[in-house]
Length: 115
Image (tube, rainbow, N blue to C red; front, top):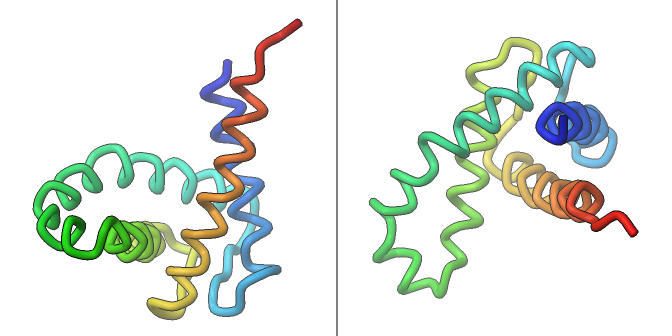
């Protein structure tokens, strides 16, 4: 159940990002659901391989290269999903940072212990 809630909330977060960052557009909620699914799959399957391959750059930059990798994964996901467009690297960069912050809050809400 938490997985479906996280997917739904991530889609809502993706739907709100175009209002905050110019250069990112999402057609509708259905597109946001598909984009959230693809973004999750890209981050689960492709990102670990890229992180291992770019480990020397991450060590040299003290982990800041991870922000570039996150932006590229966000941009790559937009190239797969029709109706989800990212105009360039910088909108992808800021969109991925905003998506990280929103997902941090979502994870905090979903992992809160019930008293």
